[in-house]
Length: 87
Image 1 (cartoon, one colour):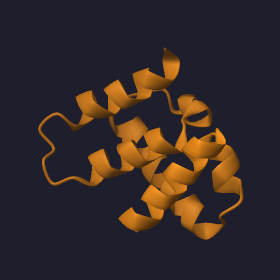
Image 2 (cartoon, helix red, strand yellow):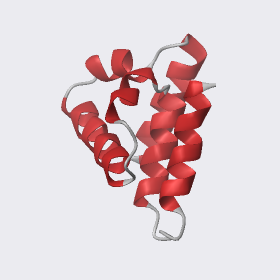
Image 3 (spheres, helix red, strand yellow):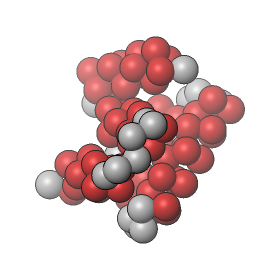
Image 4 (cartoon, one colour):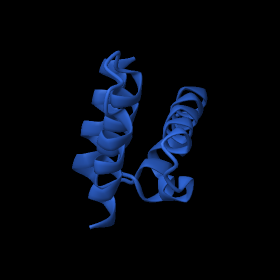
């Protein structure tokens, strides 16, 4: 799954595609990915409407950060990733 996310993130980044556009093309795997990102944002009390503006690289970063075993500053890292889309 991590390799799949990396390939999607790289392809989307090179093509300038935002996360929702790429997710719409990929079916159930992307629905699961959207759910993971949504839950990570919600759990960190970050506005979930921002999901429409995230790049695939940010989606991959959020997913990997949320699933890491070191949860010490997970929300801080996720917030930092999201802020990258707002600047």
